[in-house]
Amino acid sequence: MAIQDKNFRLMSIAQFLKSKPKGANFKEILKHLEELYHKESFSKDLASSQKTFNRDMDLLLELGIEIKFKRSTMTYQIINDSFSENSQTIFDNLLLVNAYKQAENNSEIMIFEKRQASGLHNLEGLIFAIKNSKVLSFNYTKHWEGVTTKRVVEPYALKEFKNRWYLLANEVDGKDFFLKTFGLDRISELQIPSKTFKKQETDIDALFKNSFGIISTLGKKPETIVLSFDYEQGKFVKSLPFHHSQKVLIDNNSEYRIELTLAPTYDFYQELLTHIGRMKIISPNNVKAEFADLINSAIEI
Image (cartoon, rainbow, N blue to C red; front, side, top):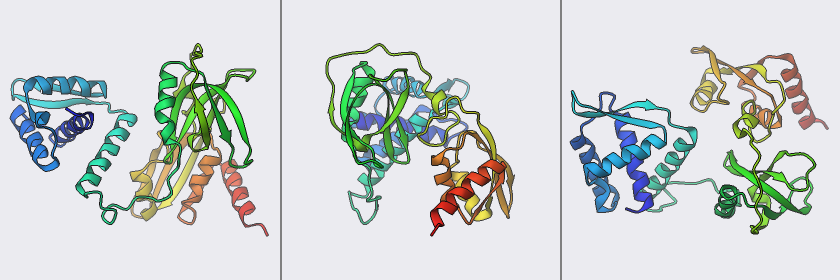
């Protein structure tokens, strides 16, 4: 089975069982997969044996989806769905690929954003370097300076933000260990020599726990920020939350009010600007002042 077919199979099983709170028996699951085979032209072993399905359950468990067999009803049910955000993103992208396949590559049916960030061609090399602790060298151009400099770094992770990918890495010539962010669209002449490095223990998630975006706020005290949106704009904020800390305070026909716990950065204020006119900052006052300064600087004559 091709990797893409197998991924779609896993995605389809998970989606099907999520739609069946009381579970489904093996024949129902098999029928669903067979229908997909005819509809999507997958390989013939897509909907084959019980043995294959048992292997699928093990793979889904690695993604945080636990499926158990209930002998009393002879059904399979999802009993623990701690599906990670990363896994959901991968599945979502697979859904897009599948949808585009159904559209028969017709750009008039599915219209993609034409403004795409570059640099994804380096993903494979960067992942190899991260997994094998390989020192990297590349040319890097900062947008605001326009000057290209040679960088030698120890790569640790890749992070996505708003359809752009960033490399988190420690510069070799730095005095202290510090993970900087490098936009993949600004990296050129990537080289992966044979030199390796010893990774330091670091909590990548902690770097961005209180952040919105790509700017690390490690060591900065998070603030409690309350935002109010009108009813219509609240629908968008509800469907795509600002931050993992988001809590709903008010949700009615006139207002959608949320509370966030984060350290505000330029990325955060940029996001607030996209809601201007339909959003109010309730508290705290220092966030109000910083946001007002940003707006005033943009309209100064």
